[in-house]
Amino acid sequence: MHTIRAISAPFPSSLPSGMSRTDVSHLGVTRSFAKGDRVYSDGDRITHCYKVVSGVVRVCKSLSDGRRQIIGFYLPGEFFGIEMGAEHSFDAEAVVDTAVVVYKRCASDVLATGGELAGQIMGAMMGTLERTQSHMLLLGRKSALEKIAEFLLDMADRTGDEEPIELPMCRIDIADYLGLTIETVSRTLTQLERQGVISVPKGRRNITLRDRAALRGLDG
Amino acid sequence: MHTIRAISAPFPSSLPSGMSRTDVSHLGVTRSFAKGDRVYSDGDRITHCYKVVSGVVRVCKSLSDGRRQIIGFYLPGEFFGIEMGAEHSFDAEAVVDTAVVVYKRCASDVLATGGELAGQIMGAMMGTLERTQSHMLLLGRKSALEKIAEFLLDMADRTGDEEPIELPMCRIDIADYLGLTIETVSRTLTQLERQGVISVPKGRRNITLRDRAALRGLDG
DNA sequence: CGTATGTTTGACGCGAATCAATTTTCGTGG
DNA sequence: CCACGAAAATTGATTCGCGTCAAACATACG
Image (spheres, each protein chain N blue to C red):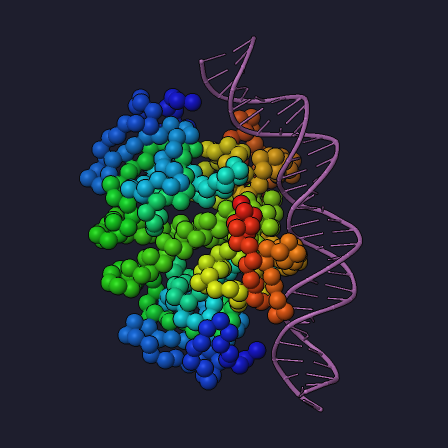
């Protein structure tokens, strides 16, 4: 898959895959990534931090035997790549064709200088921390049904409560985010559909929440 | 349990349980908490941030049905209570009798003013974020054996690699930190002991790591 | 000592993983 | 536009790790 297609949000197209840069402000440049492209890898030297302009980025960590945990999905307007050490501890990849703003300095440099961007990054980091910590309760203590219910409500909330929700990620990504297998994700969605709580039309990527109260009751 | 006893580290005793304050610097006051005391609760207004002086603090989140996830243990020198919103999203409790430095302002205020403490809190927050994110891989994708192995190695590392490790927390806490039950924690420790990888003498709170290489091989 | 709390151990069951097809969707080229 | 093949998603049968339930044992404290 090497053509550029805007799936979840529009962004400048007709650029060579993942390579072009366009000035967007004095603070950074935009950069495009095709679906599946790496933004950075576990072990890379940290040189920048990033903000999603359009598309979706997943940040994840893998074991040598292939098991993978997705730490978070980043939607337009959200910062990622903010880490402390000299090297990244995670992989960041484009879930769909994606555009990001690349800031020239890594987070700790920006923060040291203060200013508007520093405040934004600080807020982003604290928000990420809280989101991450709440996700630990899901991973450690919730059932498959509760995990899926929380995930759907969260995605609806973050994408502006428009129905249907367009899930940009495949089942594998959902499974690796929730600590499940793709089979369990699929079965649980089918179960919710049969109960009339959601509906999942043909493409299987759009989901309508028919009964949010029921979902909230299920999410633990 | 309302008497003060230093279990994991010495600190000023002979104080009425959890109530006394002693000046420690112009930046904050120390405050003591008896084992099990609440430092703050989920939903409390955020007014301070904290650093452990002695003892151990657990930060956790609970569901209404009693299921609980421990987000992290905080050892001497580590900051906690750093959150973004107006209210805490978690509970913080003393695992053993514990002394903390209480800083008069919440994290965002301190950070806004800059200075030495701001830098320390920034670093603490980024460190917490990375530790938390790595823990998600454990919660979502590791087996009971791998979880226990990683936990033991991590505790050994954080407490200065002295043998035996003195675990300040009970099995319930370990279980709720690793997303397991106490029975599974106990069985797994017994299994490791039978394999000669660790030894767990009488009190059951001290653990000697007899074969760290084997543990590292088990931790995924 | 006796009681409360914490830990270990055993028997059993269930939820989710695994193994294995089948079906649907979607990109590609004739 | 349709046919083909690859990738994604669903579904079913089965297994198994860990949770649940229950009881015995150990430890700490009054």
